[in-house]
Every structure is written in structure tokens, then in C-alpha cells.
Amino acid sequence: MPATAATISAPGRRNEDHFAIGPDWAFVLDGATAPAGVDSGCAHDVVWLVRRLGGALAELLTISDDALADVLAEAIDRVRRAHADTCDLNNPNSPSSTVTLLRLRDQAEHLVLADSPLVLDVDGEVRPIVDGRIDRLPSYTREAVAELRNSPDGFWVASTVPEAAHHAVTGTTPPFRRAALLTDGASRHVDHFALTDWPGLLDLLDAEGPSTLLTQVRQAEATNSPPPRAKPHDDATALHWTP
Image 1 (tube, rainbow, N blue to C red):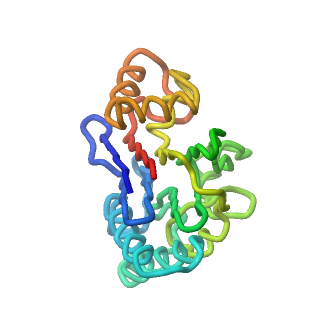
Image 2: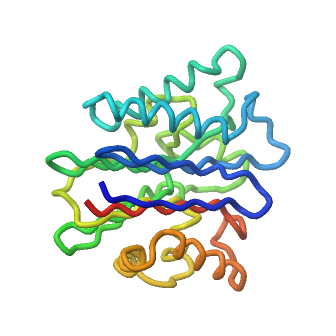
């Protein structure tokens, strides 16, 4: 599968994004940075979570034909069991991650959990697939977000609750011509800075590749205000797939 990817960390920080590419699947993960001073109840950091979750997903996607939501639920459960004896898994601030998954069989299967979008070009129609629930919360105080995380009235992420996988945005399409899997640090190229539109983003990836897209995002961050509730500079990952 002709697929390329690039990832960059926020300046001065460890990269809490993660991606992987397999024979007929790909995914990106975006770990959620805990606010300063918040007790996560966990002995591990976000980098530990995304790497563990990424490893479990890569293994399961390689050997399993299960639906993507079931694959993700099993991966979350494996990570949960890996630190159940050392950490407070009931703490709502436990490390978490977005998940964007794409698998190509007779049809293209997708899963999007939280705010890392997928962009598909199917028969010349460009379709952004977004889980926008985190943008519709009634409140964004630290306490409210913690209460609404992995809640039917709030939003869902990959953390300690396998059930979250079954609340992801999922679906199938005919095989795609090209696709982009993006963390929100990369998707701000379109959805905040408006440097291009979604078809233009795919054209840029076709012509110049993921590294150029991320370079343009960093340049835009230097001269523009950040998205609402977002950091001025964020980890950014872009994965480009052209079957």
C-alpha cells in the first residue's frame, strides 16, 4: 500500500502522537496532554498510553477480521489490563487518546474517535469524516470536561473504558482513491488556518507529501492565534494513503 506519514512534536515536548501503517490498514493516535497540576491517578504518561495502544492495535489489525470497533475495544482492554494493578482506572483524568483507523478490504472501513479527522476521496468526492462531539460540550471547565469524558452526554476517547470504541464514528465506503488521516495538530491546516480546503489538502499531500503540510502548519502557527481551547503549537501527524 503506497502510504507515507510525517509527525512532529510541539517545540520542547515529547511527541504524544503515534501512527502505524500495515498491509491493508493504517491509524493515527493523538494523546491528550493532561493539564498542569491535574492528578491522573496513573503512574504512566500519555506517551506510554499511545505506544501501548498503538502496539495492541497493530497486532490485532494484523491478525483479526473483527469489526474495527471490536478491534479497538480489545486494544483498549489490553492497555487497561496492563496497568490495572498500578493505577486508578476510575480517575476521569487517566491518560487518553483519539483514534482514527482505516482498513481497506472489499470496501474501505473507517473508525474515528474524538477530534482526529479522516479525509477520503471516493470517486472524486472528498469526504471529511469528523467526530465533532468535543466541540459541542456545554462547558469547558476542567471539572466539566473530566465529568463529560466517556459519557453519553459528552464525548468518547480511548482511555480505560473499552465501551468507548462502540461510540466511535464508523462506516464503510467504496474503495477510496486517496486518504488522509490527521491529528488535530495537522488538520488545523484546513479547519482553523484555512490554508486550503479538504480537496486542496489532499492535492498538497499528493504533490509534496506530509512533511510539507506540517511545515506549513508550523509557519501558520507562528503568525496566527491558535484554535479555541488549543495550544499555540501542537503535536501534528499526517498520514497519506493512495492505494
